[in-house]
Image 1 (cartoon, rainbow, N blue to C red):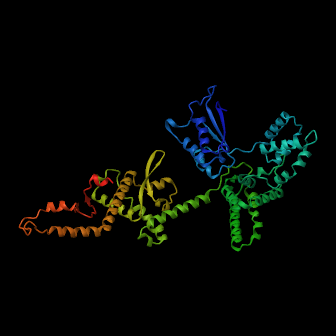
Image 2 (image 1 turned 90 degrees about the vertical axis):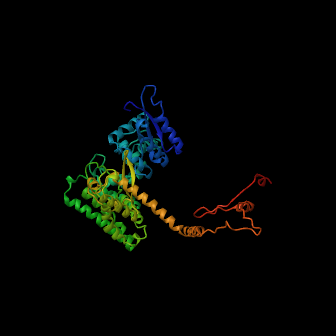
Image 3 (image 1 turned 180 degrees about the horizontal axis):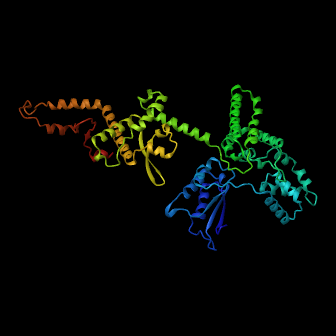
Amino acid sequence: HCGYRVVEMNASDDRNVSDFEREIEGAIRSVRTLDMDGRPNCLLVDEIDGAPADAIRYLCKTLALKGRKAIRRPVICICNNLYVPSLRELRSIALVLQMPHSEQHRLERRLLQIARCEHIRIETSAVAEIINICAQDLRSSINALQFIAVESSSGVIDHNVVHSYGEHETQLLKCGGEKSLFDAWRAVLEVGRHVDGHGRVLDVSTRTCRVQALCQRFASESDRFHSGLFANYLSTSCGSHNISSISAAACTFCDYDHLNYAVGHSQNYELMKYMFASSVRMHLLVASTQRLQLIFPVADQDAWQKRRQSMETVLTVRAGSTQRNIPQQTLILDLLPMIILIVQPPLKPMNAQLYSARELELVRSAVAIMRSYSLTFTATYQDGVSSFIFCPPVDVLVLFPIEESDRRRVNFLSNAARQMIAHQIEIERLRGDGAQWEKENSAVNKSASLRSIVNSHTIDTSGVRELSGRNMNKTGVVADLGIVYKYNQGFSNAVRRDIRMRSLIF
């Protein structure tokens, strides 16, 4: 194991997130990561596709640490289905290796070794038949060998015994007993999946029947099945095919789309029995003699996500009362492409106090336009580097550069200038909120101004006397009231009253 001590862990057994985290901490984060021989640990996580999403998220967060907390121990994850939704984050940071099927002679040698250890007498031809029945799967072959050995009454297991017990499985193999979509795609795009026990390629009629049965088996996933063929048919060795074969294969997908549309539009499901013809024709046109590196079709999902993000961006821009009246097509095709250029004036990356009057006017114009269309610049961090991008991302909506360098040339405004413009937009937003607050309280301000006018015309009460001729003492009058209302300025409901402690005692 390359000098490592392997620590095995089954992710599907540890369904609890806390148990999963404890196992990971003990294997790769513990101080005692060396065994008695001085070998470091290597964590081997089996069936990672069965682990909960929170546990996988914790594993990705742990592996992404840098500096002193970085993980320097290797972590190997094994899965049966690479494209489950829970593994999406792990696939982006991991090195993905797809293991090929084991060779026929290696499987035969392994099964013969197991038979000798278990004292099972079996012929070599019977071992080869078991492997063919189980589609070269080692685990299924071992289970089949155990089942046949227990049920067999004869002393030696020969080819006839295996064939009698595995007739149903053999029929499934002849009908294309592939277990996953990747195996099905390989059966259509690779000639090597259609060979007999002697390594000879099967004839065209047999291969046609197997591909037809394959289409019937994956009829419930017909769209994804044909999407995978479309995503991988160009990866076949084009050197062995002329351009007419590639063109005919592309036309085959068009024919499948027309047929699928006709079935859905007319509700005539009798036409579905002809859909297998596209897969058979693909196999006869572009099937490769080499092993292909297949990919999972994600183009339709990416297109759907981009469309949803684009619609959210358009709705955000049209949130204003003025922009709501602009047609959507006019906004996307005419206004936004020019706005991207207008709000990014040619400013030098320097202090704003050093800008000239013309440059300051360009900044004010950009701030006003971006505020009217609900645009700003927000900071994002990638690989420790901060950069300011449009929020919402209208540049992605209207700019389509061929290369990344072209996008950088269009977005020529520096990060310092974008940060300054974003700061000015925030200041203007706060000023706008303050103006709105003043507008809402205009009635209160008017009443306050009227009171100030009344107070400015005070009445001189110095000459006011009582009937007895003595001057009035206003202080004594106020003191006798017990409740004092003091008006200072603005709107206030404050009433003060003296409260004694004896009044609080019941």
